[in-house]
Length: 482
Image 1 (tube, rainbow, N blue to C red):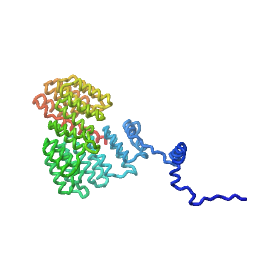
Image 2 (cartoon, one colour):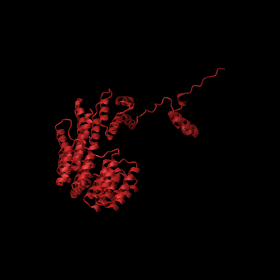
Image 3 (cartoon, one colour):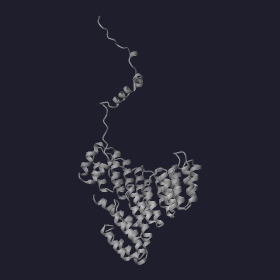
Image 4 (cartoon, rainbow, N blue to C red):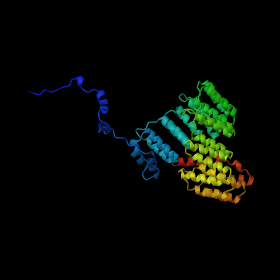
């Protein structure tokens, strides 16, 4: 008798629900085998190799292969976000020539598409790095490629100008761009524009401009948000108008029903600190630490740094150290700014040994000293006439990753001038020339010697003026390469 073939009907076939429940029905070791088989499917897409931005930067800076070769090798694995990260990483190391070479190479590729958002990020990055001319160059590059700048590009360029060494010059240029935006069809100022300008007004303590922008926003039916109010609160705080600052806070919280955030509280703490109203400053801090909801205004690392800085300015070393201990207790690690504040506070009261110990702790934490670190220590040494220590520190700083700039030498020059140490001034100016500090600024050195030694106007030589000159020379060097 021939065997009959059993053909299951549709109702007897296993359903999808059966296969879903199967791992739960089998013993545990069978279930694990099934899941492992799923993970090791032969047709699964292999993971895409994502290049390390750090390794690419090392390859480009080493110079063993050409920029074109290095970029062509990594291009198939790069996304747009990777290209921006690469340019930003080069910017952090001040490799401006490499930035331009990389960007030029990108423009020549078939896959490159001009993107205003990408250019906006580049412009802001260049502004933060104090490379204003490069920021302007990227802005004009959009026009040269036949595209019209939009609001986001103008916002980025305004932000870059507000990062200038001379804040007033930068703010004046930002206002020019703001008026230019109003004449363009697709570049009308938006909420972001006004928020940027409100923050810029706070930097230069121009309260009239703050009030003007707020009025314009009302006319244009642009409703202020939390960032807008934070900018206004910061402007009144920096100007020392604590009464108007508190009125703005009341309007924001009670009338507009906008909850303050950590930025708001940090601004209040900083403003009360500058106004030496430590009672209100500490009240704001206590309200932050007492907040149970994590979405409300909670202290961050900047909060503790602001507290420490407020006490350090007045030489309140005990309270400064208390703030530092609270920061560590809140599981925030001290950052570069924290160490610089501590060194400034110790230097203010002449605790040179504590300042030096703090500096070595910073090095042990793996942090590279910056120009601001050097200047903070030099001011302390010069304030207490520790000129030998200052000279030794300046010599050591020549081996740092961030070499001394004009402002560092100027601190020591002004101190020598104040003490009428003319021979030391001459020796230091010679050292400046040898290490290439302002080598073409003979008029600057002559003015320094004339003001400091003959007229006693050492305070007229500000650090910002010297730094602007030095930064200008650096920008010239970056563009001369092209």
